[in-house]
Image (cartoon, rainbow over all chains, first blue to last red):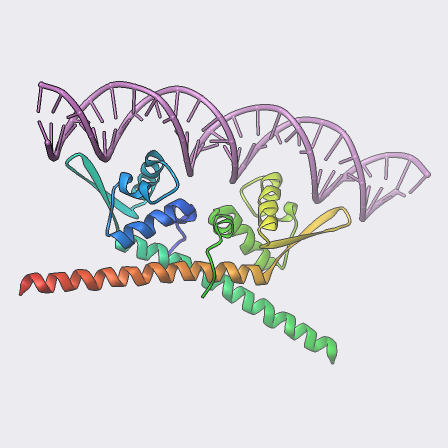
Length: 112
Length: 112
DNA sequence: TCTTCTCGCAACTATTGGTTGCGTATGACT
DNA sequence: AGTCATACGCAACCAATAGTTGCGAGAAGA
């Protein structure tokens, strides 16, 4: 339904700093490495590196504007990532449910 | 609703190999480092390390049995992880929706 | 012009996911 | 019992990455 799982997308959103960067970009409607680093506990260069990997996997898009480079979230790609998160979650959930039903079944048989 | 986001849990399931290990444990009803490594493209020691971090964050539980150590999924903790995945996904989804509505609103105002 | 700000590049460190090799202990077989 | 096979754990090593600092360059503004 959601296509093959994209490991790059996962590891991109697997990093806590990158998740916070996405949060900030969503909340503030975009931003630069400098403005983002002011609200994060890491340096501007660290943020720039993260923006680089987010850009490479397509979750954000950076456009140079004068002496600064503004980054914005790619909504389509983020929606894709969200779909994959919920998809994997649903798969595990289903397996957990099946295991629970099976173990209950076994218990029932033992008691009879 | 789901409590604070647990970065350790996230980075635990952020690794593709660890996700596959969880898949295999769920599908096979547990396993050992050796049996898992037979179905994975990495060595037994790599799997053992991953099982170590999964154990530390509580997603699996290893019990020594004779000369082997069997690992099983902690269903409660995995359910917690799934809840966090879907929670973050839902948050992003909501923000995406809000942004879309706002941008549509702005477009509407421009046209009038 | 001169200053200031933001960016990008380079060097360096720590952590982590991966490997191989080896020693040890437990289970199995004769 | 004695031996063989197997599963594990530990250590050393390598590559990639998340982080740091320092510096040079280019655009904006006084």
